[in-house]
Amino acid sequence: MNIIGVDTSAAYCSVGVAGETINPLERHEPVGNEFNETLFELLNDALTQAGLEKHSINGIAVNIGPGSFTGIRVGLSAAKGLAYSMGVPITGVPAYEALAYKVDPKDFPLCCIIPLKGEKISHLIYKSPDVPGGSEAGKTDTWDDLIQKLQGIKCICGDIPDEKVHLLKINVSPDVSVIKRKPSGIVIAEVGMQKLQRGVFDDLVSLSPIYVHAAAFRKQMPLKGRK
Image 1: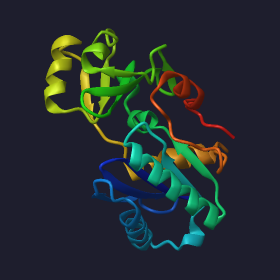
Image 2: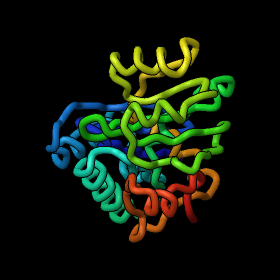
Image 3: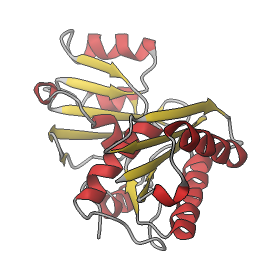
Image 4: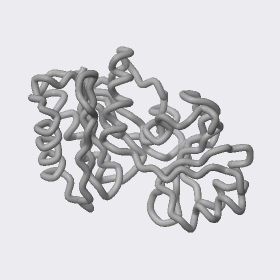
């Protein structure tokens, strides 16, 4: 099984290719808000480097957010177009799920953080691997608001600015582990491959971005996806 992963959740474009018989690889480029042309250039480069033709692709995985309002929608639209034209299944990967990927089990409970505009952030707490929890999951918060919810958290993961790392160490615990990580095309591809191998895929028409307001988040956030 060979999977293309698409991530346009921030001011970059990242395309990854993962498969059972190839070495995983990724092409990544900062693009601001100009995603379309760059995304397909990176995709062609990634397939060429992997030695794959499009007919060798078995599925598409795409970051469905939260993240850049424009980027997520462009990436999702492109991924849907690829899945439709290639006749392969598509699976949406929440940004939180990509951040939590391969974090050591000893580092749970884990809080995954998605920076939004200004001081706003969105978060999801995992009590253990693959088990998200917390009634406030996905709500838009400020850093100060979030800190009040992090007592007992062993690890915080996300695209976290250096000054916020210091803030977290002081206000949560000096022992809290902080992993600076962004979702990426290769992670999206690898997570997507695992989901597709389990038969977890999404409907091409109804697959939509994750929004950070609570009602939509609760509706769209099942970690294992939808058949």
